[in-house]
Image 1 (cartoon, rainbow, N blue to C red):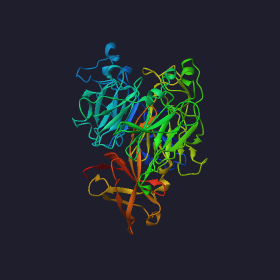
Image 2: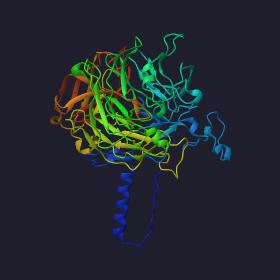
Image 3: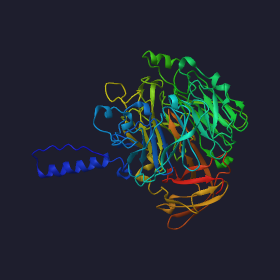
Image 4: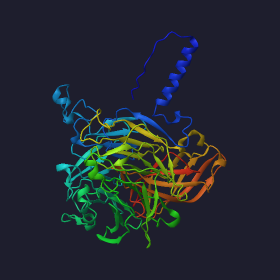
Length: 578
């Protein structure tokens, strides 16, 4: 990271010089965004850190990997990015000639961010991933589907590199020889209970879904009339990037526009149609609200599944934006239990209208609503009035008291921005580019390459006595379904922890793009026994989820939360063979 220092030479006394030096050191500490511990007081509304002035690539797509890196990528068709390469991926040198300066192959279109080192490195990306989807397989590989133009049927894999300077020759992007049956741009994907099987749903003018991999060579895609019914052809679709959530019974919840269904993916049959969410407007792209499945809990054996949908654009917003008018977005949020036999949307309201935002589950089980705009809709130059203040939503508080406004940022995160939770509890925020190419001046919202972290209040130093530390998982990190496993951690003071204050969660990080975190999932695990020693060390016996219906096999972040204060998370892997 490069910092610029302006030195002003003046005639002053020795005491003045000392004072100035102290101020410079203090400012340097504040500027150093990579050092979380430098801030003595975060406050109740959190704080922001600037990690990079130039991450190189717009974070249209973002995903945290089990190697503690974050894969970020854009579209290859955007031309020159902010990360110029010395050599093309074919080995030829990129010079300062005009042809090379405008040649897209002399620029990176995907980078991997190393969290601990606070560095980025380029990843080779040859095919256009614009408006694609993704899901992690059980071994930590990202299965990436769809894209733009003649790459809309593409299937790619990205194996995270992790630390060590990218010396692992097997990491990075791999183009599959197999393809999707239908073109999938603006589609969503969800990992299923079956081992490493993914369903991909929808796309522009595509009213089907299909599986990756196919059961046999003759398998095609499956018609889904629901996508026809929810398609608003005069407003850009308004059912693109449908919200997908895997219920704990193995069925697939699909929300598009204002309606939702439950699909039995094993029988390829719609088994339930839910009530329409109240109010006007739309929730899906290009209206671009967002959705999350609230944490599943062991107390009800993970049987209660509740989804939440927030924000979006009002009726006519897409057509109005094309004429240069930007209508106010939606304030409403709806929650509905999708299991059982009684289904009703319970509505409440955010502090202000919001669209183009991300919804992330924090280790506390609260929901962070971040990024976005207040007027317009998604698309190039189609939104105005950036939403600079994150919201914190507490599902357990009483109605009317659940939203809290957090500290504002100075950086607009509009169309093509994204966010993801990090293992240390911060939230990584990047991207923003409402233009077909990178444009940095003379526009309402320039292309944004700065990379930030939002630091929630629970990371404040004043909570150190309560914070679980040195979390370790015994007997390896691969755990079979329903099996017991032991974790150890410490607290500074024994009196700061008890059986009534501690919870354990397992979190599947999302693949985030276009205001939706695909495959995001949190489980509150059962603790069968917890012993606290005199020196503050804790031994706990936990129980893994009962099946892959509850938790599809793969990597999860295990977190200990004591009185609302989370530990640094550690990776754990739920498997069929553990």
